[in-house]
Image 1 (cartoon, rainbow, N blue to C red):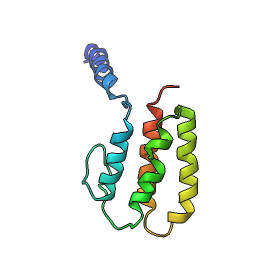
Image 2: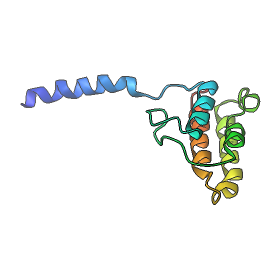
Image 3: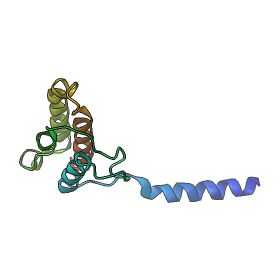
Length: 118
């Protein structure tokens, strides 16, 4: 049994080598934000399933994932922008039922930024 432990462990490590998160294009992040907001269903990219009611979904997705603003930023500036947007929208949407959408948009914004080159 012991001789099998090392090969099995090596296979598991090799299999997980492809598990690293890939860079997410801004168009994909925007699409997932709007899909989540319209209840696009549960998937690996949309783990919470979306749905519910929030009249501010479009402005929330646009605030976090504006192509004109995020496009020219480097990774650190992009992450800073996501954080500033999250802080700005936190108080506004904490009690109106829209915070789950803002949280999801914030997560997508950060994922997009982490895929940028420095």
